[in-house]
Amino acid sequence: MKGLVLGGGLAGTLAAAALAEHCDTVTVVERDRLPAGPEPRKGVPQGRHLHNLMSAGARAIDDLLPGTIDALVAAGGHRIDVPRRYLSYAFGVWNHRYPSNQLFVSASRPLLDFVVRQRIPGTIEYVEGTDVIGLTGGADKVTGALARDRETRSTRELAADFVVDATGRSSGTPGWLAELGLPAVPEERFGVGIAYASRTFQSPPGAVEEFPVIGIGGIDDPYSRGGVLMPIEQGRWMVTVAGLPGGEPPTDEDGFLAFARNLSHPLLADLMAGAEPLGPVAGHRTADNRRRRYDTIRPWPEGFVVVGDAVSAFNPIYGHGMTVAARNALSIRNGLRRHGNAAGTARIIQASVTSGGLDAWQLAVGQDIRSQQVLAGEKPDLKSRLLYAYADRMGRVARRRPDLFALQLDVYTLTSPASRVFSPRAALATLLGPTAPPLLEPPFTAAERRALA
Ligand SMILES: Cc1cc2nc3c(=O)[nH]c(=O)nc-3n(C[C@H](O)[C@H](O)[C@H](O)COP(=O)(O)OP(=O)(O)OC[C@H]3O[C@@H](n4cnc5c(N)ncnc54)[C@H](O)[C@@H]3O)c2cc1C
Image (cartoon, rainbow, N blue to C red; front, top):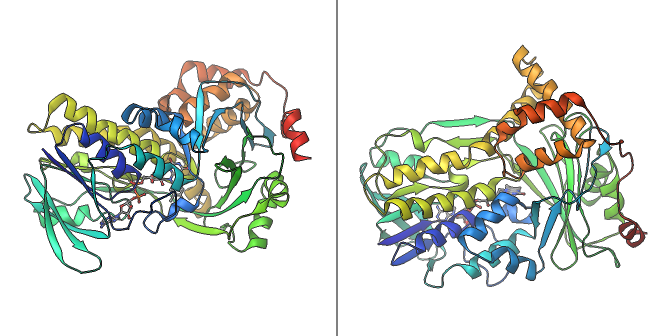
């Protein structure tokens, strides 16, 4: 069997690894020329911004490519157990720190991509500097793709038995499927988008190796405006600040620092003031949450699957896109393991891809509809008001109630389904209230404080 992957971002690379188990040959067509090392590239502009890989994504990547997270850590990335190495400020207080079994994996995005690329089977062939411009086949079966060399402008057909589109948010698949005679793809869009500004720093001499992740949210709404500092490779810190339309962070040096200082707590600005900047501030603007419902199209063509941001692209503030991309690759691997390339396999995989992104979608859309209503000055209906009141109380109580904070982290890292926040246990803990004192100062350890001093 011949496999073909369109787009060599993270979703495409992981999909290629999944296909390699079942295909005699796998080819990845990528618009960019891929760097020989952990370097940023044009096709993944978000690579200049903080990328937090959640527990569920780290486990999925290791399931597909065993030893990848160890290799990333050996290359300088951090396996951060949370909340032991996590200080987050929201609702006017800091969380308590204690060991748990949840993780953030932190590294620059170029390093993560490079380590993953190094670990995929060497038999996977890359066709670089080439644009995919269409699909071939018919409404019943996709038989390959049309590719155009960016230098020579020559076009050729790449034939395959199984084609995966992983070309990201700007994927042309809805139009390409229409050209093959398929119906319009239903699309769902929510939210108002978010602007990011990020800068990398050399951490101050003596900053402890296990420096924590630090997150600052809003006083009332933790996601409307905030910032995060994550330790990455080579003793560096990556700092990203973000804001909704109307409250976007500036990308000039002074404006960036002032934005961080005016967050609900000035800690990020204080830490940046003591660290050496390693380059300019990078900006990025992301559109709304967008989901294409390929799973609803009947009949679905054989031999074709869409994954990653090309299917579901989320507000990045929640940090779920890479985890969903990794799950999508597992859907391909497991679907092909179970059914081979028999009739109907692609449709089954496509349905599994949608369900693999459902919890991330519900979390992002649930929160962003609220921000959308606030920005538009709309009054939420009674059901929404009750829901928001419950979520706010849970957020406030969890800061001072470790069992509830742990439950929220299970959901946030996509380890537990989003519905768990409505479980009897969560509701009871929310009702009973805090069990620990409020932390009004950042709970650094003595060693962290000494190092920062
Ligand atoms: C600012 C920002 C911050 C983020 N932070 C996080 C985070 O903290 N945690 C997290 O899990 N996720 C995060 N994400 C999401 C994450 O970046 C994506 O979900 C993830 O990279 C998977 O993307 P992808 O591979 O599907 O698409 P992309 O990363 O967009 O890759 C698509 C690839 O296809 C190539 N391509 C595109 N069109 C064509 C074409 N026609 N022909 C050939 N090649 C083509 C591109 O060059 C690129 O290599 C963030 C996203 C943004 C924008």
